[in-house]
Image: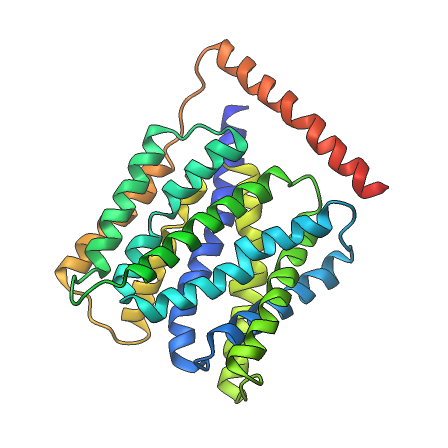
Length: 315
């Protein structure tokens, strides 16, 4: 039984890893072929992905999910995309990535507040190692740091962590459908801002269309479904440290595809991040029977919530 549980857990972790790897690959794609229109980039990324998932799920929001989709759309997709683009404009990439590398710790804090999940010491250690490794990889310390950029990065970090925790708490509905609703709400909320700030949508040539197709299908639709599936089946601390694969993928692909040269400092930082990810995946062995009873009590507390959500969806 324990071996079966471990294998299932590893399968969920591997599925979750699709998301940060796909997100990390968007850096190369964006720099290479996508236009420099951040708000429209967020809209073109979110709306088609949401429509694609909606066609698969064929379910519309009901009841509380109308406002929940709007809240999660702001926190997880539309608002997050806009904040990240603004951060990229105000901060050097190394500083921005180092701040955003705190996402595992932010997710653990949000999970503690929203879900009541206690972060394991090894997960916290993995998150701290990830911040140190990303900082070593990317932070050169050159030039002044814009405090507004730091504030926007912290808002993006805290907002997405809260959104992920809320998505898990409200997770008693179809995974693909709820992801579709979030993406559609997020893209729809950013659309008016894109029209006002950036004007008409940018003209897209062949490479840009291919780039957006990849970003939409793989790095958004597939990635967000994988990420939210992981949050439903794996502790938030573990998912957070898996998310450190995002900057790792960006750095590695930059070297392999864009011909960027990795220095010894960057290689050392890469090794520290990978070690942090590995540490964050360490699982505790089952303890005493009382621990099993505590898990069952937690499951009993959650089950009525899920039952209520399913009842609302049927009504």
